[in-house]
Length: 213
Ligand SMILES: N[C@@H](CCC(=O)N[C@@H](CS)C(=O)NCC(=O)O)C(=O)O
Image (tube, rainbow, N blue to C red; front, side, top):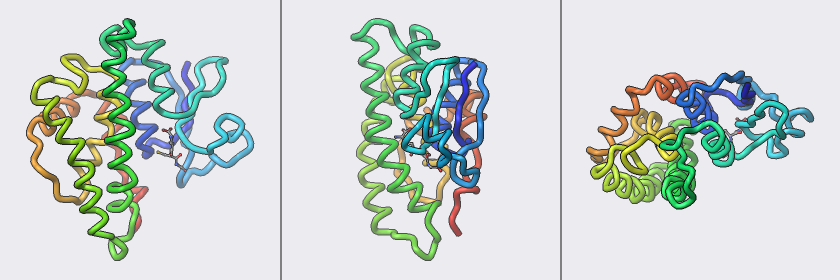
């Protein structure tokens, strides 16, 4: 049984829960972080000295933190060949997109855009900073658009861990109050993700709790 610490409004927790849902793994999740607190207790800090969520414990193994590491662990142990290939060369191709989705796409979206639009009072909205952040993000979405106009999924023809790392920000990207460029292949891809029950359950989660008015 997997034990997962982290509130369901955390984008990193969402990526992890979506992955767990896709692989149909049994789990218990505890609400920790943001309005729930609990991530500054000695017990929590003993599991993750950073005080961040998510944290995963699989059986009696040492706790794991860092979403990317957790996702790769789950993919390696519980994913099938298509989701996380066993050949190092094939796996590296999926991992390339997985890493890109985290360090390029998600890092260009969450703090620079999502926080500035949702987690900032509208009177404090810094529109020039938002516009600049959008330009940075769009360069990466251009890359995604080319890839998704040739392939059904971000790392190729099959659904992989890279889709979890990339797709988990798309609900917020398409939902928040910003002007979006047209990315037809990305929009179709998002429509396909919305057909996946685990995406709906774990990613399409209200972020009203996070909103600063
Ligand atoms: N690099 C870490 C970042 C983790 C992180 O910053 N998590 C956020 C939520 S997405 C957090 O713990 N925020 C504090 C809180 O929820 O109280 C990872 O990828 O897991």
